[in-house]
Length: 158
Image 1 (cartoon, rainbow, N blue to C red):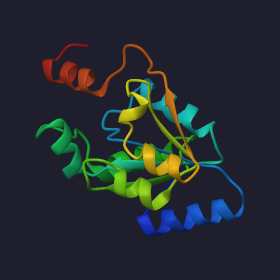
Image 2 (image 1 turned 90 degrees about the vertical axis):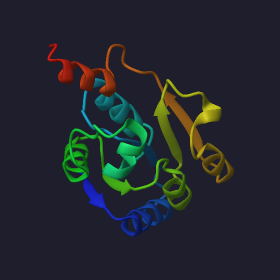
Image 3 (image 1 turned 90 degrees about the horizontal axis):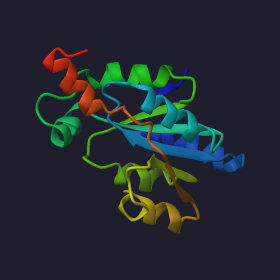
């Protein structure tokens, strides 16, 4: 089971991984309503290195991005669920609308996003590549979206 860390603890884990020559992978998201698209992204992200750190948007940042009706679950519940996934080693909450500050502080070896992003639009790409890391895009699993799932729940459709 993964651990929910503070930024300072995550930086210490990153430093230790670097000393041991281990690859540190980072991805981020709201992970509000976990679905197979999320679990596949996390599984594939983890396969790119030795440790997977997930940056998780705080409740405040989810509302800023998704609107006042989200998140459906609070940040502690979301962090607990994400940390319980076998592919996840660490979870860190961040309060900004993007994970740029977190990425710059961690400087992962691999930065992962879903295939719906263009490489040039991946937040933190420049910092990671400047530090010698790489960006990896993982294809989306068709038919899965938290926003469409939330809409179906609200409408009462199965």
